[in-house]
Image (cartoon, rainbow, N blue to C red):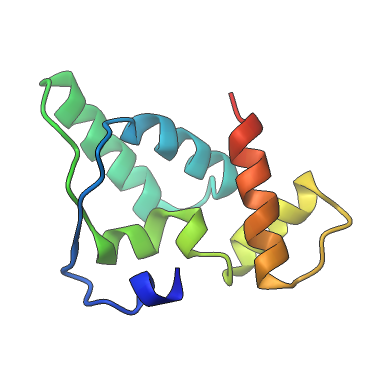
Length: 106
């Protein structure tokens, strides 16, 4: 993830699926006070209501909203620790627990 995060902010991230709103719902559960995330959710809801794609994404925005790219941020660390109280501050452990949380998220 560090290699991806080190690319220029203008890098376009092209994935082969359109479930951005589902991913944003999870991101909002992790960081409910993230204002950049709130704005992006609104933008994506508007796009999808017009049957327009939300992709490709821009890396600079992903760095502001994607919890998997924000595992060093206190807000993400604290959210993960609420879900898995025994987790340490180790970034790999935070990432792994975040992935488990996402796998089980409904």
